[in-house]
Image (cartoon, rainbow, N blue to C red; front, side):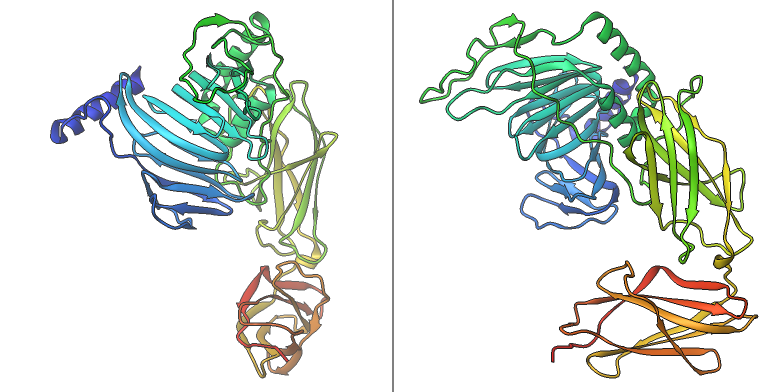
Amino acid sequence: MKKQSLLLLGFLLIFTACGAPTEGQAVDLSAELMEFSGGVELRQAAEGDFAPAQLGMKLESGGALRTDGSGRARLDLSSGTIIRVAPSSFFSLESNTPADDGLLTRLQLEFGQIFIVLQGGQAEVDTPSGLATVRGSYMMVFSDPETGQVYVTCLEGNCGVKNESGTLEFQAGQAAMLIPAEAGQLPLPPQGILMSEEDFAEWLSSIPEAVEILPVASQTLSALQTNQPGLFAILTSTATATPLPTSTPTLEPTATATNTIAPPPIIFLPPPTATKTPDFSPAPTPADSGPAIFSSVSFVFDEVLCGLGVFEAIVTDPDGIGSVYVGFEKNNQSVTTPVYVQMSEEGQSIYTISTATLPAGAYGDTLFYFIKAYDSNGYLTIDTVLSEPYPEACDSPSSFSNRTVSYPTDCQVTFTVDVTDPETVTDVFLRHELNSPIFQSQGLPMNNVIGDTWEVTISLIAPVTGSDVIHYAFEAYDNASYIAIDGVPPYTVNYAGACNP
């Protein structure tokens, strides 16, 4: 009620100056890109072209956003509603129109998954298999691009789905599925079920706005499982799975009936696995009596590149694990502002992550880290802060400067770098790959041409063009056998020649 009152007050202030729209009169709908990671593209209006995402980009009615398998995004609508878009998704803005309890925002989901955090009013999501609606707060819609099935969860508020065969209203802690029609037949009526523990865990790991209501939602789930197991009543038409007539009539719900058709297996997207610091990680929630058990927590530095390492932990919980993160800092045992990276489940309660986001350090530095786990009820448990000293190979006395790349011939590239060290540099190597940041080949010895300057010329394997990218890094060893790495992650340079013999 408080959110709605504030929203209505804002409308009154705007409409006093501009004039309030009447029922059915469209209100401009726009959105601003507030967060994104991975592959994200936007079409700013219905007639525009898709372009790579940039923070602050605006979408107008008809504008669309699409993500690849690594892409995630947050859009803030002009109505105040937040839309979070999952990987491999395509959705667009349609319109705003006044409704009895505020604005009705219409969206189109072609495929993929979106999470809606509604700030008053209503929202409708049109999908290839039917319509999903929410009044109140939190709804997730997933449209499978291969099967056409649509899965909807209602974390808070009042939700609904409908297709040609009926309408289903459901509430917090419940879910529904829309199943596309077979050729020449009407679709099945909407299928109603309870949200699973995995559904709650997905909200927790994907949507930071959901954390504050999870305890209430979990209580709702427990009550539903106790008092209302299985399917619940739906409102549907009597025409189900019958041949389509030559002209399709508008189907009106008739009487309340209990659907006895068991729903197909639920399809949902698992929590995403991040390979870098997440753009939005879950906020801490009050821990319960310690549901998670940590064992075999470890970290191992890469033997060559000290900016890399592998975290591993065995995490178990009787309520089921929702997501696991590692937080770490250099030389700070309190770990006050840690970098968080989500860990991947490898099976049998083993969680791991290989990361290149470690703070650069030298021999004598210490990496402090801990594991935190959220269970399926939203409870948080944090493991003891552990430490791992940077190995001797991570000593970094060397200083790299004056890096240059030149092209003696079309098929040759010369790398030059100045390397200084108080203990005297003995060897410098060039590591490089064409069009790949992962080095597969051994480092090439560089020549000490004069003073602190080292140089090497490489020949590129044809065919190579100006569109190719060289990834490179330098390794330096001093007379105490310490190693210093310059370029983690590696430097890049576009090849300037055209090697096509």
